[in-house]
Amino acid sequence: MTRDSMRPGDSVSRRKFIVATGATGTATLAGCIGSSDGSGEETTEESMSDETDESDDESDQTSEGGDETLSGQVVITGSSTVFPVSDAMAERFMENNPEVNVTVDSTGSGGGFENHFCPGDALTVAVNNNADWVDSMTFDELSQIWRKDGAETWSDVRDDWPDEPLELFGPASTSGTYDWFNENVVGEEYDHTAQHEPTEEDNLIVQGIQDSEYAMGYFGYAYYNENSDSVKAVKIAAEEGDEPTEPSLANAKDGSYPMARPLFIYPSEEAIQRKPVYEFLSFYLEKAETDLVQEIGYVPSSVEMRDENLSKLDEIAGK
Image 1 (spheres, helix red, strand yellow):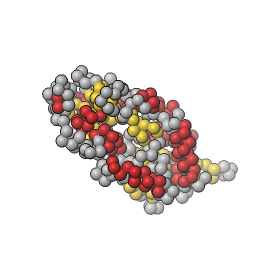
Image 2 (tube, one colour):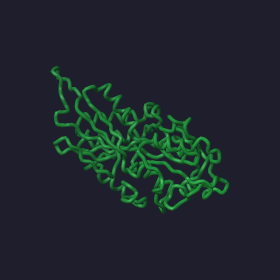
Image 3 (tube, one colour):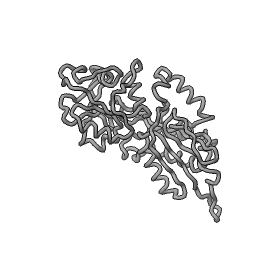
Image 4 (cartoon, one colour):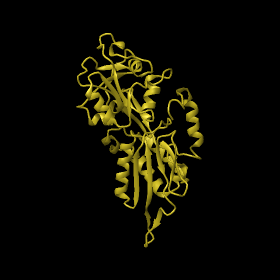
C-alpha cells in the first residue's frame, strides 16, 4: 500500500489483517495477491508487493513409469528490490525442475506488510564521489532533506555544508523501498517529498547522483555494492550521538546498521495448493537461509525464520 492509503499508525491493524487472512486469502511468507479466473488472465491487488500465481489444472503430470513429474508455471510479479532474489531462486529451481516455467517480472511493489522473508535489505543513501563535505548523517537530517517542504539546500541542514540546491533521486511511490524510507526515516508526522526524480530503475538513481556534485539518492544495498566505485555511500546514525555505521551485509545482519528493511512475498493461498507453486515456495524459503541470498547482496534469513515460514507454508498447504 502507498503511504496515502495506509498510514504508519495503522501498522497494528495491518498485522492483524495478515493474521486474519493467512488461512483464507494469502500465505504470509512474503508480496502481492494473485489469482486466475480460468482464462489465463491474472488479477492483482496492488496493495502488496510480490505475486506468486497458480499454474493451470494440468500442471501436475505423471510420467509413463508412474513417477510424478513436476511441471507447470509459476508467475511472480512485483517488488524491484525483491526481484534479484526471486530471479535467482527461479533460475536455480528450473535447473532442477526443467518442466516448470518460473517467470519473474519487476513491476514495483506498491507497498507491503510487515512480515519477514529475510531479516533485511540494507538501504543505502549515496552521494556524488566529489561530495567531500558529507560522510555521515542522522535520520533527522535525512528527514529534513526528504520530507515535504523540507530543506532546499545543503546548508539548510548543516551550516558548514554548501549553499547549493539539493538534487534528489529515489524510488517511485509504488516502491516498497519508498514506503519503508517514508515511514521509518522521513517519519510518521511527515510526508515524503515529491521534489525528487522518482524511478523504479536503480541505475537511473546512480546515474543522477553521478551527474551532479550536489545530488543524493537512496536504493538497495545490493545495487550499491555493484556500483560502489560510481557513488559514495553515507554512514548512517539513527539518533544524534550514535556512532554512524556504513552499509554492509554484516552490519545489517548484526543490527548495527539502522537502515535494514524486511523483504517479503505473499503468494495466493489457492496457488499454494498447486504442486509446482508449493515446491517452488518450499525451495525459495529453504534457500533464503543460504549463501545464495548473500551472493546476490542481500542478508540471508535466520534458521528460525526459515523454519517458521516453512511451517506456515505447510499449514496453508494442508500438509
